[in-house]
Amino acid sequence: MVDTYDLVIVGGGISGASLLYTVAKFTDVERVALLEKEEEIAAINSHHTNNSQTLHFGDIETNYTLEKAEDVKEGAELLAGYLESVDADREMHSKRSKMVLAVGEEEVAELEERYHEEGFGDLFPKLEPIEREEIAEIEPAVVEGRDPDVPMLALQTPDGYVVDYGMVSNSFVEAARAQDGVDVLTGTEVRDIRETADGFTIDTEEALIEADATVVAAGSHSLQIAQEMGYGEDLSLLPVAGSFFLADDLLNGKVYTLQMKKLPFAAVHGDADVHDGSITRFGPTAKVVPTLERGEYETVQDFLDVFGLNPDSFLSYGNILADRILLPYVLRNLVYDVPEAGARAFLPHVQKVVPNVDLEDIERAEGYGGVRPQIVDTSEKSLDMGEAKIVGDGVIFNITPSPGASTCLKNAMKDTHTLVEFFEGEIEFDEESFREATIGNFPRADGATADGASDATVDEADAAAADD
Image (cartoon, rainbow, N blue to C red):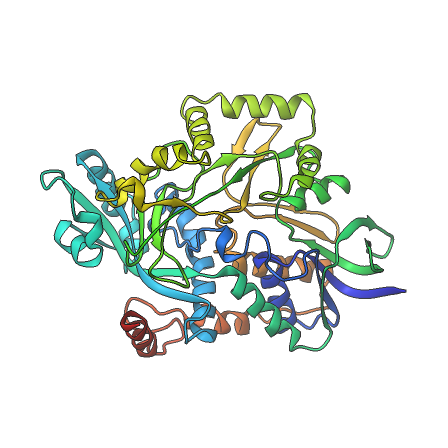
């Protein structure tokens, strides 16, 4: 038996789920299917234990340029508005203080320049510089035990959205399922995708599926599938596994440190867990691994497929890892997973956030952390920051490392416009309604949402959450 759809989405993480929601709710596509190889939606990198639980706006991520922050900001506001609309009880997210911390004259000067001269203060109206006393009021543990003669500065905002992206993925899927013509097939692994004269034939263990258009949103596996179909042959991946360390109740919100120059990986930060504020997570670490999924050794072959085992890939890896800053960083991160020695080596990073932490206060979080695919351009022999999108004739491949989850709805909006082009005007996208349902609910600095409504209910919910 062959099932036929207008659109098939491969991958049930936050990227595929957000596209399913956008297409099902805001276009007139008649039949759409989501295929997920796991038995549950968002079981891999979108699961809440496998990522930093952060909604990235670009305000405190000091490795972002102003241009990138502008782009990420809109994506984050789309998702934040969705959460404000559908998750008033804070089951999928919590909203807490968020800051980036500078310690010492050099870091303080860098942060001041970023805020005043580089334009981040103008771009983010809620972001404010605060000094030692104000930092201590919000995050006492950050100041306690720190040398009083060392200058401190933080850029702080109340827009610290802590997100369970797995629950959000399921929310998107359930909203889509409520529409006619939507099928969600879990436990359905795609074995092959073939282009045909009329579209695509997708081979799964259960059935053959035909689709007019296909979007592959399968994380690291997206590039593997793309290359099997003849796309993305000048790209490779540097898979980076992130781990976390846990401590008891130390922080009220998120505290980031300044980004190390030339590193594409997130700076170490501490934050309270999305579902249990009494647990503080520190991380992520960044260990290069030869797998596409954390702990799944059968994906070693998948990695070798996308690596390519060709001179350009080896030269690209050599060029990237030979960097005098990146190589020591990669080697240090190998140590963090070693029992006992790992916690001892990681402790200084924790103490940069919370000075009074001792070795016995932290432990490596077993079972936490996913694999974030960093894009390697083998023609330029370079590591590319951000996401990669390959667009073919009727097919899109999304490879979405951080901040892919934060910008999932913006990516979905872009892909939906591309799908409208694929269907040559036979379908329509109601972007106005999409924006009303998402960014239209985002609370602004003036106390109103983007559609003009008051965010008093948001403040009340936050106050209630603080009382809990």
